[in-house]
Length: 634
Image (cartoon, rainbow, N blue to C red; front, side, top):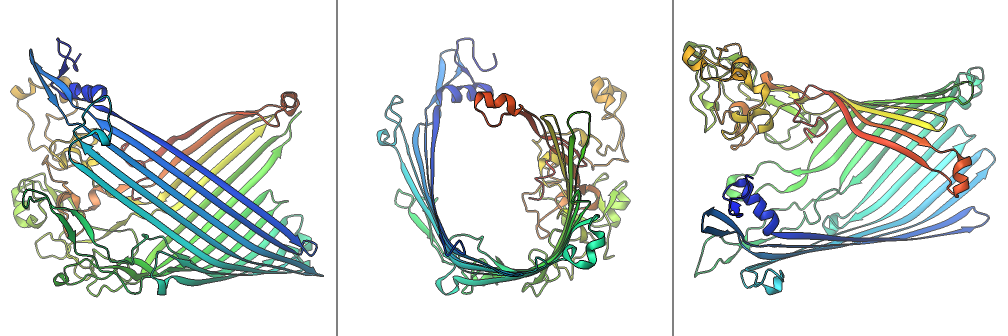
């Protein structure tokens, strides 16, 4: 056993310490409680022309986490057993309360070909969370691991968060002759996440629809066209997805790392800046769409095209002078425009058989969108901030030009400004880049107007999202398969899962990295020392036409940062190592069987279905196996 010494003590190695910690080093327990109660009420007046609805929801949650650690013993040799680790007890509790109240009045009246519906109501929500975390070292006894039975340093923290929203809302509907549809909506909402004078916002919307299939001139096409509708809408919504207290300038107390008078004094950092105009983001959306159903709705098409403008998007504002000594505040600093479209095609049918029919349905979804910053105060067009005209997801980088092969090539192109701090000097086999500005140097600029050798080389935003849902059933058996994917997306890797030993000298290597630059082949003497697998992999051979550069640790180091201001070496995005982030994934497969009602009724069961389901069954992706294509760029 690698974890135990011959005398039974835990071994002085990683395996032994892990075993000691797991068996002797303490334990932890977590208990969670959740309760939700809901009350509903409805009253009808004037022969159901007027209805009053109200509902109230209360949710209570509690989490109680207890942890303690104990010293454990490691055997360094015969009669040399040492105690390692410390003892402490910790108690962490969390309580949360969430309440929701909705009450609304609905009016409905039909007068001939005219139908009127109106709704008005009130909504409020409140959430509060309290977390207490207490920890104390030096347990008196391992038999009673408790914060109250410890004598060492005591640390205790408390965090309380809460938020509330209130709102009034209304909806007005008018339908004439079941053909022409109008709808008006409005919300007047207030959020505790904004200052009192910026807390409220009004968000209206309107929509119209025309059911063309109900027109007399469509009479001759009804055997084919079973549904045909044109739709248009324009409206605004408020977005309050931000921190609970972002409008408050707060002090952050903490313990100093320096001893003064024999103790660590309490320090308080300077509060950050806040914006006086901190308020709702307003999202205005214009939409045109159509619904088309053919052959008694066996085949259905839905298509929408939209433009969504976010006004006053919350973001860190323009760069401030260093003399201010504070970071730029979060404010309604930017406007964003998103344009896109969505397509849905659905088909359903039944195939007759001798006994029971086979039912089949399929639905295909396809969508695309692009987002652009239309307002942001960035007079220098800095690449580290939003700027007007910027498309979200832009990847700025260098254009790869192979690898240096000779010292003469190195001397002709100065790349010293992009050498990572831990890498060696530039040698044959180092990455080579295109000198786009022609000054004989490879440099990275800081602005879009003076990007030097940088340019837009890709975009990380997913394009052409798609999904395919297939369903079939026969005689109680059912099967479903769901595919999803992205047809276009760029991804530049910045972690050791791809770069391995190029990023960190102690990181592992991966098979794809074995195609690295090797200036010379090994001598016969060295070849005799290699294993056959090493030789078969070609690692002893010269390799000038390699995909990856010469082995230098830290060449892909990201410790200095990954933005254009700080990145060096392979941490700078470049065309030669840009990955295709498109993928197709078999997301779900489900096979089931539902017992006939004639059987389940005997057992007083209304429905009984057995099924087997699998998630993420298979994927087709150009990314290396270490990456989940759904998770990259999230």
